[in-house]
Length: 114
Image 1 (cartoon, rainbow, N blue to C red):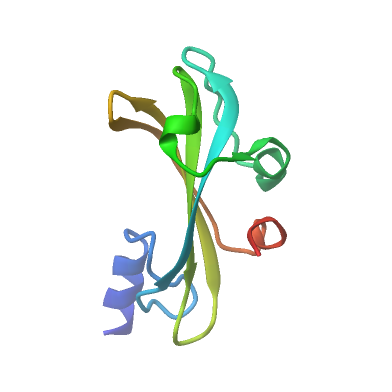
Image 2: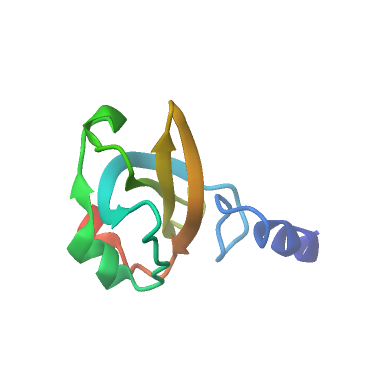
C-alpha cells in the first residue's frame, strides 16, 4: 500500500510529499504579475515571485493582457508539512488560460504567504 500511495502522490499536487496523505487547503490568494501577453517567461525561483507579485482582491482589477497568479496554500493534517502551489494564468474573457503551475514544498514561500 505504501508504494501505491507514493506513486499517486507524485501525480497529485495536493498530496503530501512527506507522508502521501491528502493535504487540506488553508488559503487562497490572487496576485498580478509584471508580465504581459507575448512576454511570459517561466521562473522557478521563489524569490522572483516574492519580489514581483502584486496583491489584487479580484480578477477585475487585473488589466487586460496582464498575467495573474493564483496561490493555493496546503497543509498536511497528518504530518504538518506545508506546500504552496502557484498557478500562473492569463485572464481571457471570463476564463483562465493557464500558462504554468509551480509547487514549492520546501518552505520557499512561507515567509511571503504566512
